[in-house]
Structures are given as C-alpha cells and as structure tokens.
Picture (cartoon, rainbow over the protein chains, first blue to last red):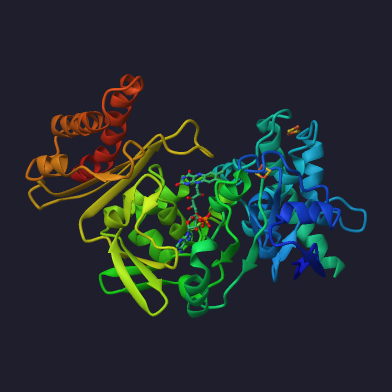
Length: 165
Length: 290
Ligand SMILES: Cc1cc2nc3c(=O)[nH]c(=O)nc-3n(C[C@H](O)[C@H](O)[C@H](O)COP(=O)(O)OP(=O)(O)OC[C@H]3O[C@@H](n4cnc5c(N)ncnc54)[C@H](O)[C@@H]3O)c2cc1C
Ligand code: FES
Ligand code: FES
C-alpha cells in the first residue's frame, strides 16, 4: 500500500512512492539519499533532523513523508550551489562552529529559515531560532557567532545576486 | 516501534467528518503530529488510519466576531503568534504559546492538538480558560460547543468521542482596563514541559480596587484549574504588596492541600508562590503605577 507524493525538493520537482508510516526523515535519507538529514533523538528534542518546509524549520522525525506532498522542501544538500558554499556554511567554518558535525545540518537549516525571513535578526531572535537544535560538542557561543556573522555576510551577497542576474 | 497504518487527508471538514464517522474507532487524528508521532513511535497508539487534518481550510482562520474571536483549531503556534489580532487580544496566550517546545515544534504544533491531548502541563490551556474558552466540536450531521473546563476531565482525558473533530476555539477579547500575565517554570527555558504554569487576568476599578481577578494554574493537578477562593479573596481589595503576597501564598497552600504533601512539596510550595507572585505583580502592581 504505497502512496505517491509530489513535492519540490531542493529546487527540483520530484515524485516518490512511499509507505504511509514512513517519516520524512526516513524517506529523505533512504530514498533520496540525503544523509545530511540526521536522526539524533527521533522525538523532536534535538533538531538534528531539521529541514525547511514552505519556509519554516521543522523536525523531519515528527513528520510523515506523506505530509511532504505538495510542499517545498529544503535540506542541507540544497545549500551548496555550483560548488559554492552557502554563506551560512562559510560563516560556520569561519567561526569554528563545527566539531563532530552531527548537529551542523540541522543548525544550518534553522539558521537559513531565520535569515530567509528576517533581514537583520536581533540576538534574541537568533537564540529563539536556534534553541531547538542541540550540540554536544562545538559549543553554542561559536554557533551563535556564526549565525550573527552570516547575517552580516548576507547583505553583500544579495547585491552579487542582483548584478549576476 | 511504529506500526503500519493508512494515511488519509481530507480536503474539507465535511469529508473529514464522513471519514471519522466511518473509521473513527480505528483512527488517530494528526494535526501537527508533535504528540501523535511520539505515541506512534512508542506504540502507545496503534491506529489503522492516520487522518491528516492539517490542511482543512475551515480550521485555518482567525475570525473576530463581536466580543469574541473564533480561532481555527489547526493553526500552528507560529501562525497564531504572528497574527495581529491574536497578538493584540491575547497577550498571555501568546506568551504561553511562545513557551511551547522549540521553534520547530511551534511551526507545526496546533492549539487544537494541545487541547485534545489534554496534558496537565499544556501551556495554552490556563490562559484560554481565563478567556471563557469554548470549544467547537463537530461530527457528521451535528455540532456542539463545550466550555474548555468541561471538555477536559482529567490528565490526558476529555469528552471527545472518536468520531468528533475540534474545528475551532471561541475566546473572549480582552476588555477595557484588563491586564493579564502568563508565567511558567520548566527545567530549562526551551524544550522542557512546564513544571508549574499559571495565567492571571484582572482589572482594577477607578478607585484602584481589584474588581475582577481570574487565576488558572496548570501542571500541579490532573488538569489546569481555576483558583476561585483566591479570586474572591482578591476582589474588593487594593492591590498592595501585602495582599498580593498573601494571595500568592494562598494559591500555593490551596494546591498543596489538593495534591497532598509529597517529597517535592518543599520545592513546589515556594515555587508556586513565587510564580503566582510574578503573575499577580504583572497584572495588579504595574497597572496601579500607571
Ligand atoms: C519536543 C516536544 C516539546 C514539547 N513541548 C511542549 C510544551 O512546552 N508545552 C506544551 O504544552 N506542549 C508541548 N509539547 C506537546 C505538543 O507539542 C503540544 O501538545 C501540541 O500543541 C500538540 O499539537 P499537534 O497539532 O502537534 O497535535 P497532534 O500530535 O497532531 O495531536 C495531539 C492529539 O490531539 C488529537 N487532535 C489533534 N487535533 C485535533 C482536533 N482538531 N480535533 C480532535 N482531536 C485532535 C490527536 O488525535 C492527538 O490525540 C511538546 C512536544 C514535543 C515533541
Ligand atoms: S531527530 Fe528529530 S529532533 Fe532529534
Ligand atoms: S558539532 Fe558535534 S554535536 Fe554539534
């Protein structure tokens, strides 16, 4: 008893045949091969599985794959374009915000959802957007610094986008 | 581990009620899924069908109507917190919704789900109780409206039947001169369930005397409860610090009397009093300065 779902995954329209009980996390990892979506806790508490659906950061472990139908879905794999890192990824490297890296994809997606929506977020807003993501090694100070740094990098990059197009 | 089930996603309430009428007993409703997905994972729930109600258009609107606002049951916490009418009319509810889980949880979790789950620690319930919350419940061919206090009958227990759907919540708008506050204590700021939570709503009359006081405390009893004795104690008094302190101690004492003395009482009693004091100060002391 498979279900067909159609959705936009990292910019491409795709169709998948899934089981009704599979989570978005299962399907993105096992069928689409997007292993940047990590399972930490499986119960919505760590944020390692964070993806963006229709512009909002959500825990893919708490979402059925069937719920992706008709949605716009972004995972960490969609950040890099033409071999060029996304500026949030660059900021994480620059600020030493990655250690084992397990939490990083989720952190990047939470940061992206915020920066896509808010031009210049306050520290409170940044903290609010990142508290659903746990890290057991790198340290939150570096991670918050990286997001702050990314907000500064955003403006010039947007100008590039305009001149290129 | 997760059992096998079918997935249905009705396009409108009528279709949803038909499905519930037919399969209600073997169905689990899924709105945001933040409670249901956990029960499916642990095996606490083993439905044959998951009914996804998250896209029912009739349950996704905020409609002001005279003195009240009708809030759709499947709107997410994030959608509600961002909604201008909700922000303006329901400050304590917004504060409470802002305490739920994490942003990822608030981006999918719904008010309808919080009510139907009926957890003693549900953040949204105490502030809604103070606004005379009435729950709109529909089933095939009929509908009923029940007061929130009456709907919830105990811990994780309510009067909803398997074929019933919460479609909306009717809340009374804030009246002139009223102020309200929501406070909670959890183990940490985010991603922790409230240990104690309280909402207080009140108003001073022109001579600075407490004219109305409504207090609802959650997490300490099987369901969030109104503290009517303390409410009547406060009415007719001036909100001096002494009175407020006394009221906060009464709230703590009444709760301890209700749940009995336990190993946690020594921590809980002053914690409840402190929390109640914060709320009472927000509502009555700041306003007397203005
Ligand atoms: C990590 C984590 C942290 C959390 N933190 C908090 C917290 O701080 N405070 C808090 O209060 N809660 C918290 N919760 C619990 C949960 O997020 C809330 O109870 C939420 O409001 C549930 O809404 P939902 O839409 O996700 O419900 P669902 O999981 O979709 O449904 C919950 C229950 O209600 C039923 N139901 C849902 N909608 C309806 C409807 N319209 N009509 C009839 N029945 C319905 C479902 O069948 C199910 O039994 C947390 C959960 C997680 C996983
Ligand atoms: S794996 Fe989803 S939140 Fe931890
Ligand atoms: S870098 Fe290891 S968990 Fe965050």
